[in-house]
Every structure is written in structure tokens, then in C-alpha cells.
Image (cartoon, one colour):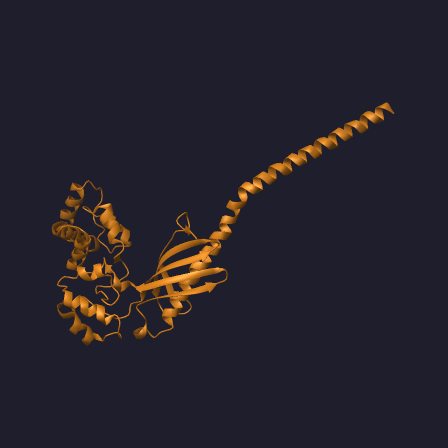
Length: 296
């Protein structure tokens, strides 16, 4: 009997030890679950946010494609409710911006000057833009290489179109502050001509030969029907070769998705192709999900 009681006591102690261990394990798991639950929810939140932002992209594209190309609006805004999310979209044709790959030298120089560069520095930077995007003769390539070397840079111009507007920060003589300002007004998806009915006043002022009268003509035309080529030429005067209101296939959309008390933004550039099964392409996407969204 004594041996039996010893065995029973050992089993009881073992069971109690196992229960204590299980209790400690359960407590540890509870702490782990509490600590990791927010991070485990992040993928789901990101998926919902991206779904809402992509819904904004889809709606923007198909609202544009609902119009025949000659009648497409060149700018606009709309809001929509998708599930538990609210989506606000503002869009504008890329022809409102100065195209680094196509705009004339004087327009590029004019923009830099409008942003605070001196006339000499603006011209210098415009020279670098044109050299970067062009195929240079050997003599010109050596001259450019010397300019880059003098600026302490170990590379030279690409000799091909800009892939990304951010590349202007790589130009010799370009300051970070000027590059940051310029990014609001330049593109690599535009055209040689500016749409004066939607362009920012800074872009309009950059056009060589711009006068207050011509600027007023453009402002008045924004509130009326789209002018034809003849009417545009008449109001543009000496600037008629620098402007156009032809619809563009490239659209920049700023999308704000509001969900779960957060506002998440994305900036997207679309190319409308009108081809099935992919009637549009996303050429550029930047969102601020990773810590940049604002509450409320």
C-alpha cells in the first residue's frame, strides 16, 4: 500500500506539473497573441487599402474610357463608396506638365526659372536635360562628361529618354530643393505641347513669350467648351506651337481611400490603351501606406 501511495503521489505531482506547464504556456501564448495581433492584422489592412486604391484606379480609367477620345475630359474629380471605404479621386491629363523627354529647351529653362533658378542656371540645367535625353556626338559627350566630372559626379548623361522624373536630381547643378519643386510640374509621360486649359499657372508662366493677355485668354477658355485648333491658335498667339488641347492617353490620378479611421493616398499614372482585355496600363504607382497615411 505504501508503494502504491508513492506511485499515486508521483503521478499526482507529474499531473500538477504538466498543468502548471500548460498554464504557463497558455499565458505565454496569450501575451504573444496580444503583442503580435496588430502586426498580423497589417497584411489584411494593407490588402484592404490596396483594394480600395485600385478600385479608385479602375473607376478613374473606366470613367475616362466611357467617352470617345475626342470628348474625354482632361481633368476632373469624383468620389465613390466601395464596401466600407470611401474613395476620392482627382485626375488630370499629363499634358498639363512639362515633359522632360519632349519639351523644348526654352520651356524647360522657363520652368526652372519660374521655380527660382537664375536665368543662367536655368539655361544650364535645361542644357543638361536635353543632353541627358539625347544621343550625343562624341565631342558633345566628352563636353558633358567634363561637366559631370567637374561637379564631382562619377557618371554622365544617360543618352536616352528619362525613365523617371526623379532622375532630374542626378543632373549637375540641380539642388535637392529645386528638384523637389520641379517634380510637381514635370513628367516623362507627356508630350511636347502643353494643355493650357489645365496646366498650373507656374507651367503657363514658363512658356516663352507668355503675356498677361494670353494667360487671361486661357483662363477664360477653361470655363467654356473645348476650343478647336483654330480657336486655340487665335487665343495662344505666338505660343500656338507650344500648346494643344488634343486629348492625351496619359492620366495622373491622386486617390485617397478612407477606411478604418485612416486616410491613405496614392499617386498613379495611367496609360489608356482601349485594348481588350487590358484597356489601361499603370505606368507609375506611389502610395503612402507605410507610415505616411494621416488619421481621421
